Image 1: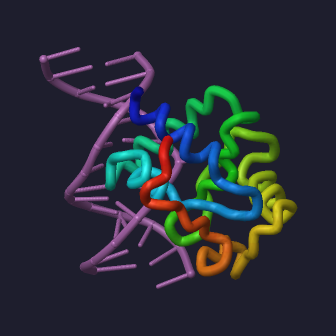
Image 2 (image 1 turned 120 degrees about the vertical axis):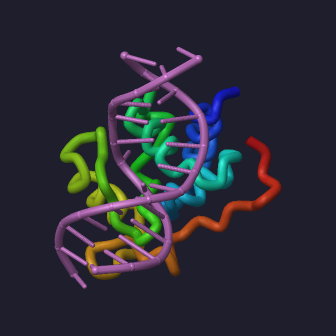
Length: 106
DNA sequence: CATTTGACAGGAA
DNA sequence: CTTCCTGCCAAAT
């Protein structure tokens, strides 16, 4: 099981209407500061249907890119459509941040 | 095996 | 608020 594989599994478990920061994903995936590696995983997103990468945003709620349709714009729209709360054109992490169970199994 | 690459994070200017 | 710079890590070359 490679790190990226874990990342995919974690992201795949993010419930609709919630989001996670790259930082959190990286940490939960096993490597605390591998946020950049997480980015790689998303970039080489193997299957967007099983990996809702749009639910992964930067630590400040903003977003950098999106391989899906319409790029970051589409990502933004999709999040809104799922009920994610926004604050100043950024995801309101205070509300829409997913509370991961620290002992959740991958 | 050595380098480069990113959809990052955080801090400084 | 905007750049710029550094640290970071895994994967791809």
